Image 1 (spheres, one colour):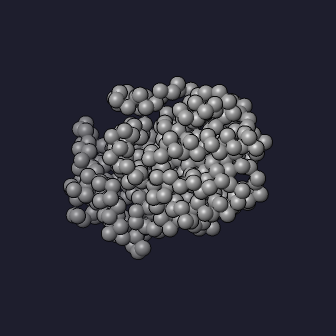
Image 2 (image 1 turned 30 degrees about the vertical axis):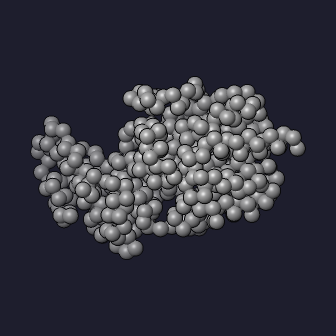
Image 3 (image 1 turned 135 degrees about the horizontal axis):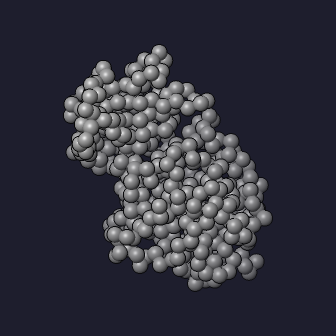
Length: 131
Length: 306
């Protein structure tokens, strides 16, 4: 699996953000929320800007963090593919990129969560991105 | 939007000849069927199924002189499917059932519970005991942590509903309604041919599959879990209850295995009949629908003679 990397805000000219994955409860297992706080310095950045990553296809993705009254920030996360403004998504590419982003997340969260368990789960349920 | 699960599945339609009915309950549109006459029996499904799970249980119960009500849980089947995780709670789903039962004014009601139909149906029953004639439980639970070793393991259970992974696997790829149920029946080839497409068809898009990863997150794994207090109450209420009860379990069930769950129900409800063992993994109705119906009919007949 090619690497996923945190990047600076990509150029927005001629592009749009296409919603591809939504998580309403990022802190269900708090270590997942902690990973994003740590990775994108969210205690300092807060809601001022999304996080951005480059996925294996070369496409950029915006991670938009969501706050909810009474819950630690961020409570939710929306993943947007940054695509050409007037062109449709390549859903197969997006799906592989999302799977890679999930792997990057699990690696960053760390033990007891493992890539082995993620991949075994993907194989068990025959996720196309597992090939 | 009202989904016709058989729109592109005409070969499957004959398995579900029942008239669709809808009720507004607790703010949501609930689909249910209401067949036959007699003392009512309500069949409750769980995650990620719908009333279709009971397609082979319904006719024998109706033929035996029972009125059979099968609601689709809000978020599943042909019922309304809220788009936000925060729309779902255990208490809210119990209230949904209360809304339907009171609208239909069901009394002398037998509640048959499977999977999340257990915590919801038993919760409703314990809060409305004056309406309840009997209970039947199958592959479910009604007490706080831990529900099962299966539910505490990272592979596959906790990984598959972890943040972002749950919406990806169960939302984008519908893995629970498809391969998940397939893996949890005994006769997988029969399931693939007769039913798998129907379960997948009622959850056609990511947004409609929300509850498939929300319910797993409501299973208490520690004392801080959201539903912990409700399960403590439910277990205590059942322990005091003398409502006649029936326990039916799948011999091959590895999600709620018999040694832990059926026997704990027997300790909790020592007056209950059973456990009666049938062929089945977690979705035992797929493998033993007519036998489950016969067990319920015989149980209710004995109650009627008592």
